[in-house]
Image (cartoon, rainbow, N blue to C red):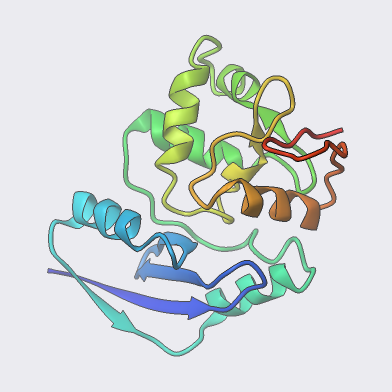
Length: 178
């Protein structure tokens, strides 16, 4: 049985859960995604044990990010599973700078599969380490906010926190970047 450490950090947009192996972070997402967490960890490990840990450098980095140090997540080591394509996509997310966005199609081209925008979207949806692998920076081709496991309001908050500007649209059901 795989033993993993777990810690939680309060943020302005909900608690963040961090789960780590000795090699790095295996899961980082908002605490209200418990079913997703359980599914992803079960797929990877089968059986596992979560061992609560005191606040570490990881939780401090998350707190610093939300306090305005937007580079605080950059040095975090990740321990990724998944296919070669998934790992390539997830790691390429780290190359999208703070305050920048990229469309699913642009990301597909960047990883060498220009016609795979839908596959990029599906892979983003399976990203087990949000924030550190910043899938919230991937947007629709028309600059709209689409698809984020944490919800579009959080995606908008994160992008605003990082300096993105939005058009003011009445009764927003979707959001557009400027």
